[in-house]
Image (tube, rainbow, N blue to C red; front, top):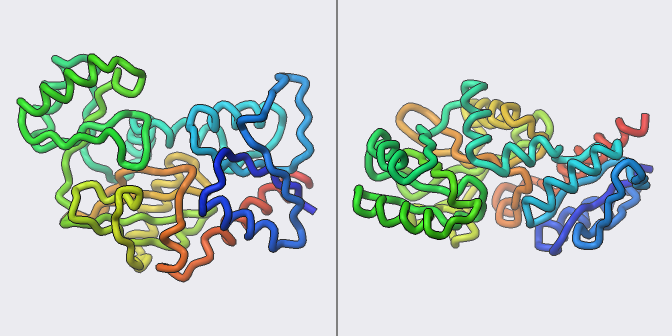
Amino acid sequence: MVKVGFLHTLIRPEEKMLLKAFSDRSDVELKMIDVRDLVFRLGRDHFDVDVVVERCINHSRALHALILFEAAGIPCVNTAQVASVCGDKLQTSAALHCQGVPQPRVNVAFTEESAMKALEDLGYPAVLKPAVGSWGRLLSKVNDPDAAETVLEHKTVLGSYHHSIFYMQEYIEKQGRDIRSFVVGDECIAAIYRESEHWITNTARGARTSKCEVTDELRDISLRGARAVNGSVVALDLFETNDGLLVNEVNYTMEFRNSVTVTGVDIPGIIAEHVVGVGRQHKQ
């Protein structure tokens, strides 16, 4: 019997699907762990679980909880290192670059003045993103220097951690769609198209989904992207270009509610199998 700790906050559709996948297995004892109730006693902790699967909404809580579970000797899916890298777009871009994974051009700056130069180097239109963030929030497509000055000034005045680093990406004309692929372990198990009239194609923003065949090219770049961040359960957002696929982002607490029916792939069941395998290996 593998004891699986299910680290969570809110129980969304994905969490319900995963809970059912674990509950349907006779070899799993499921232990619910609400991150909001946790108290860690560093060096004195003992958790009666063989593996923790992370399904938190809040990135900082997830990251720090994973660090502390691992300090107590508990393997986690995904690991704290994966959460740290994937939770920060700058770290993700650096990891992809170091492993030679194709991605849109990225410039980073730390002041309004240097950011304007960085945008000129990229060319307009360009996309400004917070280094930490999800669901397509706080993205800005800037079409010219006047728009860029306005957005950069707002970010500077807001002054929060999310806006203190200017992360810029070249704008890719994606013809109304992008691809999300799913990697579990060493396999690219499924992929979908996300289609929208809006330049942001997140399903959280209302994008429509349809099945995307996992071609050799898609499988290869998805696995390379996952390995670059050391992710064992991740979703990758990719752009189609005339020169091939580009990895836009890598997500470590992936959403898949709109993908199971479309692809016909039992994504939560495959994730559960992987997590149980990690826990079983830890018990040996």
